[in-house]
Image 1 (cartoon, rainbow, N blue to C red):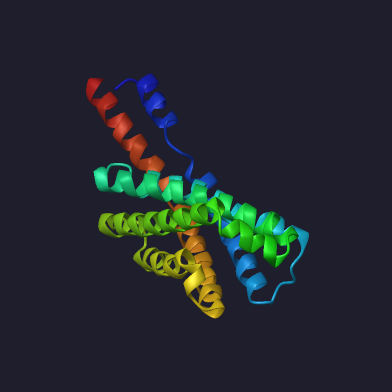
Image 2 (image 1 turned 90 degrees about the vertical axis):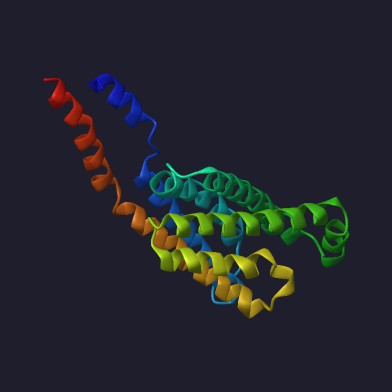
Length: 213
């Protein structure tokens, strides 16, 4: 392999530190969301505005985790990644509506909107989010590269969040806090990977060049 080819291959790698930073931001916003729901943080235009960004930043984190732990795995992992990304994107849209639209409407208008196609869209988004989260965590657990404790905690926390209308508020608040801690743990785990990963790539890259010499 030539050095030019090696550089081209390296250029396809997703920057893990960028994903880790996005994960830390997602975790911070999730903690704010949990505190807001629990009444520990006052409701404000700022907290409403940043709330949906947790899922948006989580998309970047998931791409980084997939790069680090699931890049060379099979079809199940590919499906899990895809469903999880779609679920997070759908959840982002749902949170935008809840925090920036419903917050400006009275209860009667919200009920009317939820009884129509928007309610169906919310249900589909919740199902896809839950399925994607569980499938992704199963793929990570099977692969064994990512730390197992935050992986399992992420999966468990996703269940009450995915069925938020069926669980008590305190359970949902606790699930959000656990999810935030899990996301933070996975983001910090990514921070430890780039140097060792690059070292392995460099080793694999220069060994063939040495043989050719």
